[in-house]
Length: 223
Length: 223
Image (cartoon, rainbow over all chains, first blue to last red; front, side):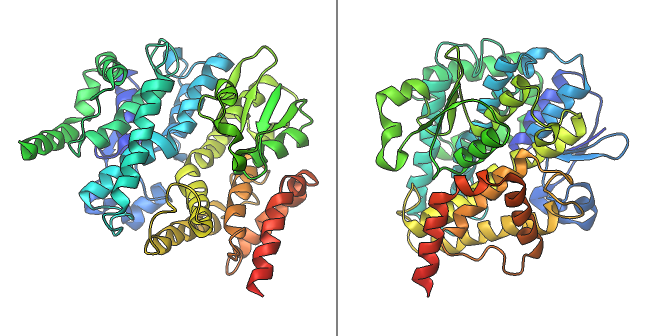
């Protein structure tokens, strides 16, 4: 299997961690999207949406969308620990609930806030008036994680880590890269984040090498 | 099972059609969210996110997020035709690919364009400069359906209808309600839309009674 990714893409990082943690054999191929390598005709043949992450299986079968890929891998490889995406239908539904909820919440909220602050992406041309709205969306999403998702359990969907936690942690890193303090007045979020890192390391840190450099630069700029 | 919904919510409409079409017994309960009925403490006990659609199963177990609900129902009821959410892992992955892709594409693109035109939702305070950006996002998404998803097959993910088609059709209705002509220069989209309606009627039309009234009003206003 070929895995196309880049460590500046949140869902790429989530799948990178998942593949390494579960020892899934794949050829890891970097698509340098900040330099436009996803826009070539060659890559369009691999993923018609011209985005990372995506996979090409051994027989040439292609799939995009990180969460679709996760589900496919869970069905294909029977030896991956069940807690990442449970087979019990209600436990699975609880993970699905987060995986569907996160797109227009954690992902959109933190991702677009990052883009606006770095002046990249389709919303970059919006004037300064847009920033407070997107900041509000991001903070509402972080509050929902703190007060609704992390209520009465160790991880987002149960007391065991699932793919929901991995993808959530990778998404909130976008806000961290702007110098925003994710954990101020959010003690559950902090505790959970440390637990996700601890459970998935050394791969979490490995996937966040570039992110952590950007965070360090943001912090230096603030001093 | 209790099904909480409102016909002005796109994913509510999709689940409404799916439940009726497959003869799934449920108590249909309208939550009048345009009047704020989703913001009561009582409804917060039913769905902590205070949104529709959501379900409460016979034993009181709760679930939100339309696509998570669809997956749960497919696992629970074994007599639903397989093509709505295939059991074959690759056919299922193809449907999952759309179900994940659509959140920040079809759903966000058409939904926010509708909100901006109707001056509702969190982006309503943005000035006029925002409208072309959101229109561009919506049109890119419709173009992707026309040229990438509907290439070489009758429905979005195969030659048979799946839940992806139902949810996609319900989402693009948002743009139709603004008076926007979805089908101009998009012949495949038109053909597909008619086929989705034909395959799911009378329930499609039943779920779109309010939407069709708004569309008729937009068209009258244009004359």
